[in-house]
Image 1 (spheres, helix red, strand yellow):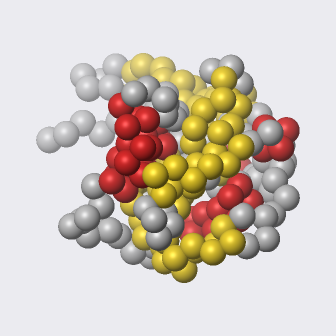
Image 2: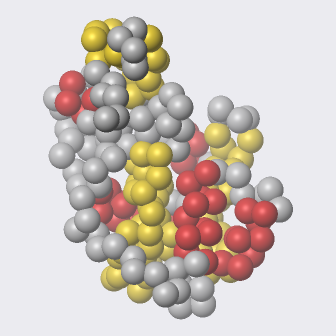
Image 3: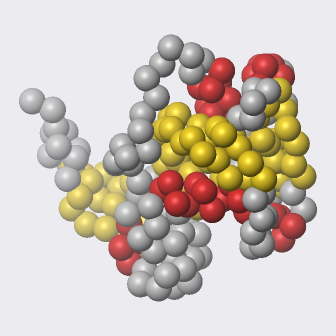
Length: 210
């Protein structure tokens, strides 16, 4: 019978606007306990937006953690209280790419760093694209973003050449390239991996505000 890893105690160490860090004491096989630090997260959505020419909408954005600009998919946090994932994805696609889509499917659900972080991301495939009013982005990095249409085969080559490094973008691009013959999931499919820790503690509509 598989061991059940129960939480004996939990302590909140850091509570910042977009992440928190807690330390859990967990019951291990054999009866002992061990401490595990977990980075809490809101969860996120990302969009592989493909046009009629099989080009993917990509952005070039500065990321402080690696001190460089990365090629990424339009994406964003699920940081609006009680907002469903598809609504969040539509908002992010309009905000970062100025696009709307008629057709939406679930491409992949990924846990980006399961060794220490609860961040999970639902990646959508969006097609039937049209231009829409670009929403005002929040944050200094967004004001500096570049946008480009990249042929999907070139994006795939960019992954293997080490030019596309964002893990969510790599997953989305490679999954989109292999989508033929696959049964993509409906957007009604529950996102069971979506983190709940921070959202449950915070009360206002903007979950970044404590």
